Image 1 (cartoon, rainbow, N blue to C red):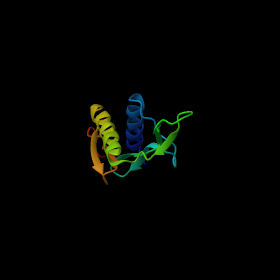
Image 2 (tube, helix red, strand yellow; image 1 turned 90 degrees about the vertical axis):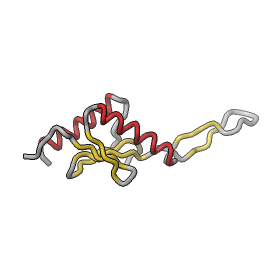
Image 3 (spheres, helix red, strand yellow; image 1 turned 135 degrees about the vertical axis):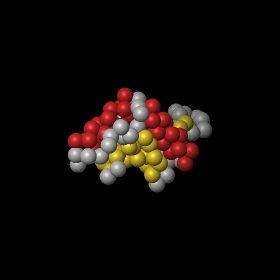
Image 4 (cartoon, rainbow, N blue to C red; image 1 turned 90 degrees about the horizontal axis):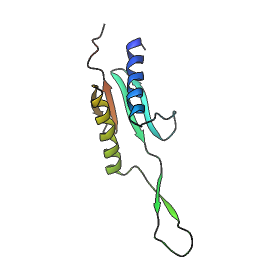
Amino acid sequence: MNDHEDDLYLRVRAVLTAAGFEEIATGGEGVHLIHHARGVMVGWMPTQITHPAARRRGPRRTRPVRADLPGLRHAFTLALAATLRAADLTVETHDDEWLLVLDTHHTPD
């Protein structure tokens, strides 16, 4: 790994953090950044969300709902891509679930 790769990784992390997306530790659920030969891979491992179940007598109950619904994943990926493009980074979709972030201002040595 060279200094440019570290700079790009740190830049991607800073852009996402400034926009409210926080990187999650390996193995956790949330936004992940991974060094890649061509740039930085950005992906989202959804966390479980809940919504109120039908109201019945007594306290409100919630039931878990999978957050990996295709529409939700697509919307989240679009938001990540728009944030990165606004920071003048090139973004390619990779395997329909990951984004590959390239820095168009860097020329290889």
